[in-house]
Image (cartoon, rainbow, N blue to C red):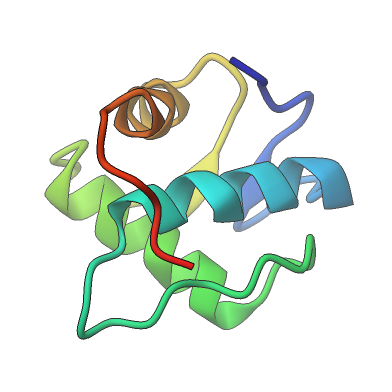
Length: 90
């Protein structure tokens, strides 16, 4: 499994490669009617909102921080979603 090298999201370094990976991983979780993220490698408001929703619903953070750090619970949960047999939405 690939990993991020620096933080992504609110206050993060937001390296293009890291943002792209987080966007790809978030798309494994996003289900219709919500459209998938466009994987651009650019941190935008939609990606930030998707991180916060993921943190609230999956990681069960009461106060999502909108940030994914290497080795964090949020990244571990994102990575585990991608290991499920379901296919991502494109």
